[in-house]
Image (cartoon, rainbow, N blue to C red):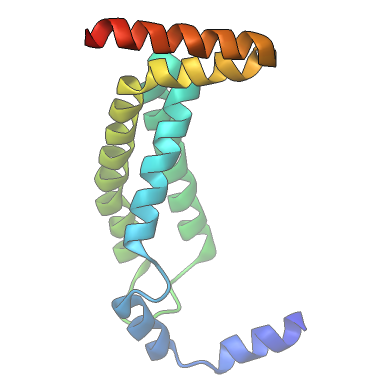
Length: 145
C-alpha cells in the first residue's frame, strides 16, 4: 500500500503541486493562524509569567529544525522553488508566527485569573464546589450593587 502511494506520488506532475500550493489546498493559513493563537493561549496559561520567553524559544527551535530538515532533504522537487526560496519563506513566516503567538500570550495574561479559578474549582469536591460558586455569586452581586 505504501509503495502504491509512492508510485502515485511519482506519477503526479510537479506543476500540479505548485498549482495546489498557489491555491492553498495543501496549507490552510487561517486554520494555521487560529491553531497557533489557541495553542499560545493554552501554553501561556500553563507556563505563567515566563510564557512569552518559552513560546519564542519554541518558535526559534522550530525554525532551526525546519531549516535543518530543508537543507538535509536536498534540492526542492517543485519547479520554480529553490531551497534558498523555501528557507527564505521560513524567515518570512517567522514574524507572523511570533506575532500571533505573542497575541495569544497577551490574551492569556488577561484570562489567567479565570483559568486558575476554573482549575481550582475542578479540584474541589462537589460540596465545596457548590459553596465556592455560591460565594462567587454573592461577590459578583455585591460588586454590581
